[in-house]
Length: 414
Image (cartoon, rainbow, N blue to C red; front, side):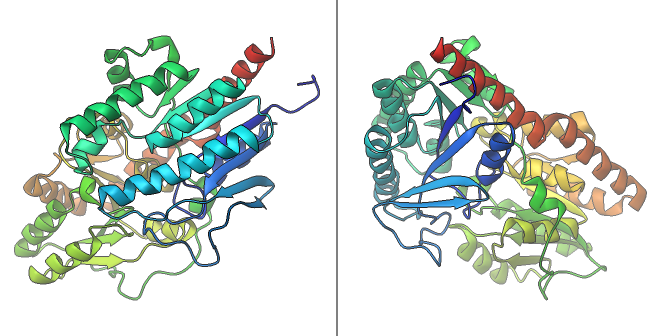
């Protein structure tokens, strides 16, 4: 690499825009702004529904450019349902495509970035890094095999043990591990990863989309007579949203004006809608998934924003990505996740916390928010936005990634 050449970064991620991902186009554009030459290697968009998005057709290879970012799409088996075999095929097919492309077709990069999950991407990236001598940064967003066990995606002890061994293999071979929370770092250190090899970089939100929301509110969006608590994002087993329906039932029996708005898709949506109807809840509204810019419209119209995950030791050390989006739009948070995520809300004094999977605690916290004066709610929202900008924002996080990329590229060069 000549002194005048831009450091070249290869971003390897199974999911990328237009799929919902915060380490997608926003990240790539910011790296280009920092002076990097970026190529994204990804699959054809099919998450979270498991169906290829309209306007796309799976091919052997598709090259394009989005906002100046080179994007290479590779074939995969599109699926994201609850079948373990089909999910493995989804992961393995993209990993095989990525490995072949990375070894034989990709231009030489100065540093490579791999997004986890799934673990299969880490395996492919590690092999590419080893065989081509490219420094590798591994960004861990889900702690496998813990997440697989916690979500019920995989329950076989032998299979979980195998996944754990593969994780350890990947960790030994990457040059730098990046995690989203202090708890993730503590766990990896306990598992033998050198502390000096791990950096905590908090996730950020799609700030541009959230700051310039588009679209309009759905006709069934609750009116001003309701205190609207919005949950936005994937609705799967990990979110354990039955507790939210139970909290809604408690509040409805109390005659509360609180209304939960559930925005998004996922494998649990159909069942949750059926249960809502069975309970005759008039204070739960479901809205379909929309692009991030339209998500911003809904979040901005909320009185408070809800985060909820299953009660599990793993989730005590994770920070759901919606936390950053919620803080960025400047609305009070109702954090029903124990541990690191709740600590952020407490540190920033930007909302209330409640125990995970505790419908009564959730209902009580929701009512406390609904009973607060408007100026108190606005102050919480302002503190949330300020905390985000100072500690969690794109410029802060991507700047730290840029420093790591440059250091690894220079080390490899020297």
